Image (cartoon, rainbow, N blue to C red; front, side, top):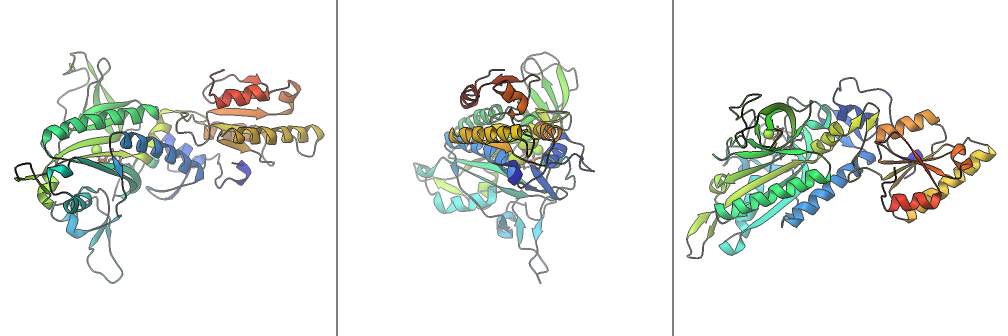
Length: 425
Ligand code: ATP
Ligand code: MG
């Protein structure tokens, strides 16, 4: 992609109301555009990152037998009423023109909708278990829409639901999801702590959250450095320094961001909506359910919170919008400058031919300083510079975003290094 053509521009100014690093850098870097409080557009750069995160999540959900589907955003009252979730604070109801009362809500979760579908598809134990998920926009009337993409009124969620004949089968799937979540979070390079959380309205059992320690997190957890055990303050009787219930060592109090959670739902929804199956003896039983969420947009913001410095984002390779940021510094209308330009064009085409994702800073109206500042802000893992100085040395400058010192390489060595992701630096 030529940066001169990119729909999205960088800005030097921090957004007025934003303090969180994700809000500052994602807006300034041209990844997202804030349309309203808690309502964001993903610009091409940001959408690329989101799609990379989505791809990792899809791979891990498919690997545990999740089947992707897509449900409506308009959820009718008849689904939410039986479970007592119609008219709750979090809903954004839809009022058609001329209507006095809403009959739809913008979907903020989909247990009811999927359970209703399952009623048509599940008759006997032979139809169980199954798990289905979607990646979809969710809508919530969040009064605290702040901290950039961490809390939106509209945000992108992966929601997986599993359906089982009994608790035992459910339990074994629950631990599979836990492992799949660990793989997702480690692939996007955030350290997510498995945290015991409130049972809440769904079930007497505890739920579990995946919490990433960060000063901007809205949650407070007690976490043991030694064994990794953690509890959400909402349900915890621990205090900073208390003995860890798992290993006896002292726990610490930390702010954290909830990037995902997993819920045992028991038969709460299947009873409310009448989802039963016939067992081997023909007896009717309620289906046992679990639900499992990951906020993709919140996860993207969390990655930025964890991976940045004062100049901008430092994307992990797995989710970076591009692998290489190629920067051309030729002086315009100048003999040597033209050679620099042609050399950069040539390298751009060679990298593209090798299947490398390149953002090529071919902008003629930017200074060296502006180009470097933008590269740091946007945070692509590898920066390649083509300049007169480098050509004199017969090479290209290659620098990793998270390292101070560049390396000078020949074109062939550079293409090879990038292609094989060799850690030369
Ligand atoms: P929170 O406690 O942060 O309000 P929640 O417990 O209501 O979230 P769920 O309804 O289970 O969360 O949603 C699943 C996931 O979706 C969460 O773990 C989080 O990653 C993400 N999420 C929830 N609410 C928001 C929001 N307003 N903006 C962005 N992501 C969100
Ligand atoms: Mg929560």
